[in-house]
Amino acid sequence: MARAKRTDRTEARRRSRAAQLAEANGGVDDGDELVGTAETTSGGAARRRARTSSSPAVSGRTQEPRPARPGFLTSARSAYHAPNYREDLALLPKLLVHWSVLVSAALAVVGTAVIVGLGGTLTGAGAVDSGTSTVAYVGSLLVSLFVGPPPFGAALLIGFMLPRATYLVGLVFGVFAAICLSAIILAQPADKMGGLTGQYLLYAWVFGIIGSAFFAAGIAWYKRFLELLNPNRGRRTRRPAAKPVQGRGDVRPNRLSR
Image (cartoon, rainbow, N blue to C red; front, side, top):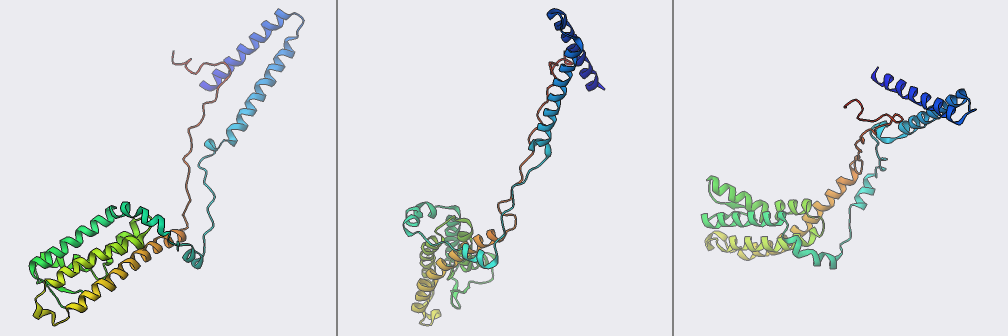
């Protein structure tokens, strides 16, 4: 009702001004002036309704067109990125201080220190037997994941978290893990190694380094592969904008607040 009253008052003022203008000009028909005013008012209202109905802010949420979902083999091929060795080497110092690399290195050092300090022994290729205490068990778990060989836990973090050059960072971390494993191997009593110290060291420095780089690059490829298979990839929903305030002739917006 309040909107209808404001509209009637506005129309009444328009008619009064049209009548006064007709009297001032002399010879201008009031009826013609009123008809012209009504046509102008109705035409302006129609244009405002057309703009309002076509405005995306009023029509609700607008969604961008969904990109075509690639096939399995297409996603597998697109997920492979040829390495750019020059740029990767230039970015290597920054990538080595990424939190995933630093956390993996810290956990590898903690595991190595626990096993060496408790006198753990190697019972197989990389398997550690250091007793039944909780600290020894945690140290053995950290060595298995972040020292290896190969360090699967570190490769998982590096592959998923780094934006690029995962193969190169994995290779460098493989060297670091091989140093940690060498410290564990050399700390073992000679009688418990059974003359296999050289084989363990060779295993750590060959398979550990190559495996670390391979698994880090493979995890990075798998991450890109999953992103390409995601049906909601690139789909964003825009929030509806605020509805524009439509004016009503010369009615002041704050007339009722006074």
